[in-house]
Image 1: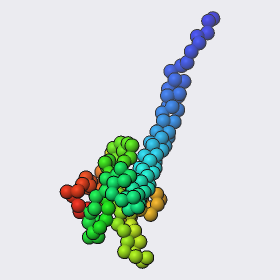
Image 2: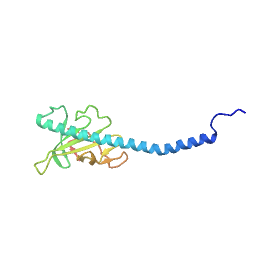
Image 3: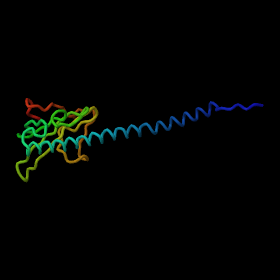
Image 4: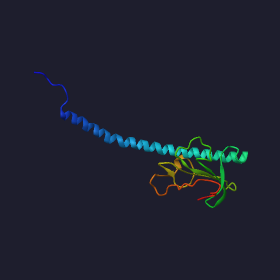
Amino acid sequence: MKKNKGFTLVELLAVIVILAIIMIIAIPAVLQTMQSARQKTFKEYVTKVYTTGQNAYLSNQTLGGNASGVKPVTVTFKTQPGCTAFDVKEGLGLSSTGSYEGAVVVCPGTGVNDPTKIYVGLKDDNYSTKGFILYEGEDKIELVGKDDTEALSYTTVSASNNSIS
């Protein structure tokens, strides 16, 4: 008698069930990893904007005017006049900003007890900072999700718009 080679229906169903269980376990882990990577990328970009804004402010102070090729705007920020704002898309001279929008605002202190403060407000398609945050390092960045109502309301920084709150 000739023996049939192949799998039975029960064996095929068992394999399908095992694969389904593996997918149920693996897909959330992959999605969580992707979410974490997006958050990390956003936080790193906030750090880049902070550093670039700080350097642009210092070069404009030491070299004067628009020597570094960036476009600063003098603004009143949180009732503090004399701050300098740099738009992320046009004012910092970054080669590519992708979908990032926002500004970095540098408010010089008046003395030893009042140091210079640098605020960053940034958003992209998925995340934003919680308003303009006083930058204290990548681990202290307050993120707001895509659907959160407290997301940064972005206003282009321009000479005609000299007040940011």
